[in-house]
Length: 225
Image (cartoon, rainbow, N blue to C red; front, side):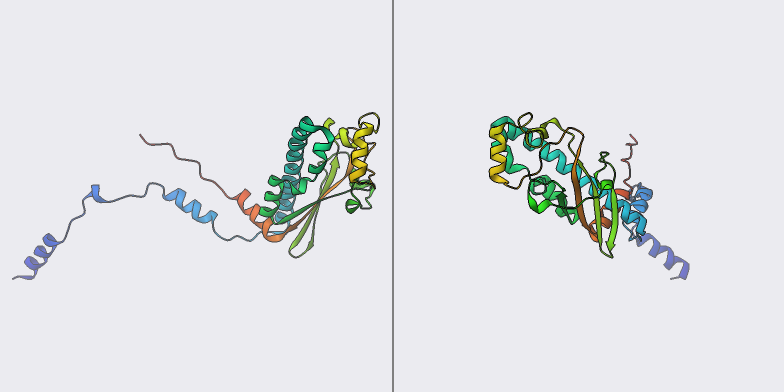
């Protein structure tokens, strides 16, 4: 058999691929962007500080929101006696869960605390009434700190931290003193700073938050038909 006839016969025997049998990728651009998003990128020191501020804001705002919800419910159900055991925002479920996700620990400190374990000497600059004033620092290679004022912004809090005999009844204050005999956290007014929130953060959690918040998310494509 002649060579050209042999080649023609082989071509006829090979399975043919028709255009309708070829699967074309229609989202190659999205796949390329998604691949780039998941590449390991170097995070600069200033970006880590910014992420630490994001993490501190998120954790403290979550604590304030959850505490307000819980205390509103408990005060309505049973007054100060029912609410007093729950005034520990760092231990509340949503706050604790977020702290674990961020690899962070949340604390409160005051020059006039209810619980002596929260006692700290604070500077006047720490007690700025603008509760958005933040202090963020990288204390070690893998450690960050976050601090902002803890301000009494809710009328609800006066039930336990306001003026005794005016905002706090004598019976309620007796309950507070029974649980916290060294209490100093009364006499506050609405809008007054009571202390500070402090958050300690691990580098891994901060870096992960930066990655998640800055990762591009492709918008869903509109169907062609």
